[in-house]
Length: 151
Image 1 (cartoon, rainbow, N blue to C red):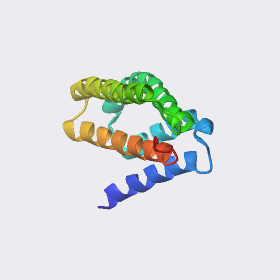
Image 2 (cartoon, rainbow, N blue to C red):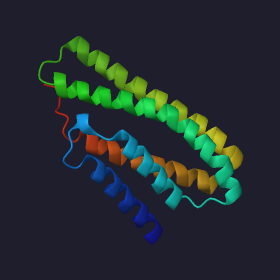
Image 3 (cartoon, rainbow, N blue to C red):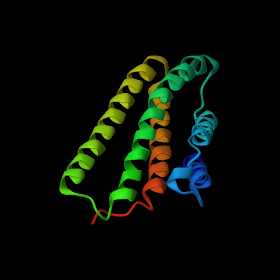
Image 4 (cartoon, one colour):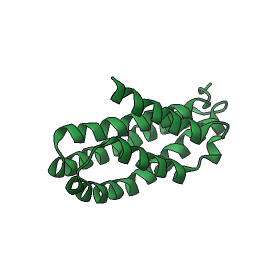
């Protein structure tokens, strides 16, 4: 239980420290990536051999991840700007864009899964994706917290 609690507390602190008292426009995304990587390094127990195989894959994964996160943030910003006056067509486009972003993110995760399974034991692959999901969920919960519902 202790090993599960500590990473969750660290994730909450990571996301909160980045977003507390900041508008969506002021998010320091580079700081988020740096702290996310540090958290993964600290929490995912890799041997030297596993580290040599994992980190290049992770860096490659993060290049695409960064672009997808930026798109998602822009998507959420759109709601803040248009929530009170969104048309039906804009709503349709927003829904389609939302699921397009989710699909692209899922495809990238599946690709990463295939690569990680070649170099890490299954339990470590699972640990990595658990961390990814917790960090991502915490990040987006903070992002969308102040996004108004469409009227």
